[in-house]
Image (cartoon, rainbow, N blue to C red):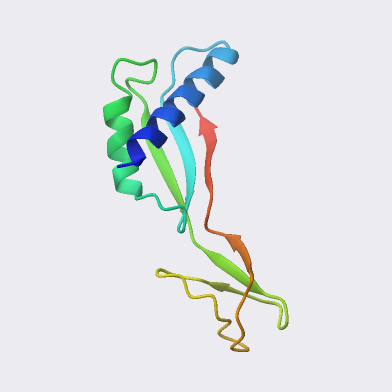
Length: 112
């Protein structure tokens, strides 16, 4: 379960940012997770709850914003949902797309 190592890294980064801002209490950490990032949001939330114990984020909650995978078709300028499993063929012109515009994100977007 690689979500545990990701949760630990999120906790470490959130703690460092909070301390840099002069605060030692964090109530919420918000992360964006792309559909194709290979992360199960429920597993990440569970891992966060386990990993936060004994840290400065012991009472913090994790908010996971799921980002859908979107591809772009250059020939017809169509942006479309890739889905799971991913399918990179443009539904408009039936050509393969080589540009993934979203869906691989994993970033902290907020610490409160």
